[in-house]
Image (cartoon, rainbow over all chains, first blue to last red; front, side, top):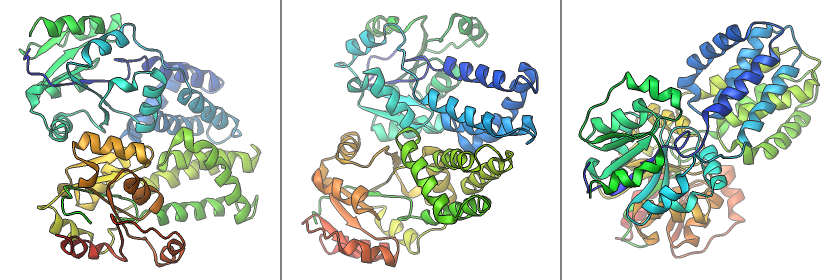
Amino acid sequence: MNKNIRVIAFDADDTLWENEHYFRKTEDEFCRLLSGFLSKSEIQREFYQTELVNLPLYGYGIKGFILSLVETAIRITNNTHDCRIVQEVIALGKKMLNEPVILIDGVEEVLSTLKDKYRLIVATKGDLLDQERKLKKSGLLHYFHHIEIMTEKDDNSYRKLIRHLDIQAHELLMIGNSLKSDVLPVLNIGGHAIHIPFEVTCIHEQVKEHVDHINFQSLLHIREVPAALNYLT
Amino acid sequence: MNKNIRVIAFDADDTLWENEHYFRKTEDEFCRLLSGFLSKSEIQREFYQTELVNLPLYGYGIKGFILSLVETAIRITNNTHDCRIVQEVIALGKKMLNEPVILIDGVEEVLSTLKDKYRLIVATKGDLLDQERKLKKSGLLHYFHHIEIMTEKDDNSYRKLIRHLDIQAHELLMIGNSLKSDVLPVLNIGGHAIHIPFEVTCIHEQVKEHVDHINFQSLLHIREVPAALNYLT
């Protein structure tokens, strides 16, 4: 890895703090609400279909997720039910928006170690308000130069990112839990990437997608980042 | 106005393109949907209360607006009605997200005139996905260096903006239709601002809020911007 890295960009959800399990928890509660109508797997299938259709329109984030849950609930109950289920889905959404932020173990020490040597930013999909709220709740705000919210994390979005950071691609290191969003597009444009799978199960999944690139490293835990960087300079 | 301006930031909604009237149109349709329950003014009052409570949680943008409409509909129908109204509200939201972008007259000529002399950006509240979609639909995307989505447009947000644009405050000119969001905080931090009220009625409202500042100009139309800038250099 190149020692000329100037900016380290961190993915947020499931890299700095836990996220995905809040979505799954809400989905479980949603299935319970509708358990009188369909089985859990049928409800999930209905929901995924709705979400897939709506994603280009709503994007990522809790509000679009909730709107898709509402739409699914109305379809499953076939308009025969009263609106109490919708009301409960709206309440589930507000609960999600108010959930505490649980940091991934070791994140704060890592940021503290890196903050004087690199410009640190957050580069994430999702909703700006949600992510800013999480960043404030996390107590990590002061480590970051700014938050970059991206509608998609593809080659072009990363090109735009380095352009407006006024750096060269090889001066960027992206750290995240998704090969597709945080690693491959960054390598494509000439940047550096570190992959840290979120859960042990993910590691097994990810082994199948073997990435072999001079600008790439895979770590088991975010705590290993400073050592991985020191090793190079 | 200072001739060292390097970055011109444009507000988007109701500065580059029409926006507010889509919200009002949807609100009107919403009131029609619920006209069997309450009068229009009562429905509006119920909705504004809901929106006010939800704004810190949902932020600006169409998705939060729709979630608040859904919540209001359920409260007004008192759960006695079936979910068809909610379904129609969801459809109103999708319609809003798919509305065409109607440019304010003259915008393209102005951007074309300014683009080689200044770094142009969009600085807007709202939802990143919505704003990017509108920017793509507008055909204006290629004029802008990047889009800055801000959760609030206050002094601190503009300080963050100039910090990550790597410019001094006096090198920023902000152009927008809101004194509160686009003008006053920018002047507060030492930047320049041009106010262009969106509608004639707004002009009358704004006369009451008289701004007198060496870094400030008020124009009647965006077409006057290049002349206002030339005048200085």
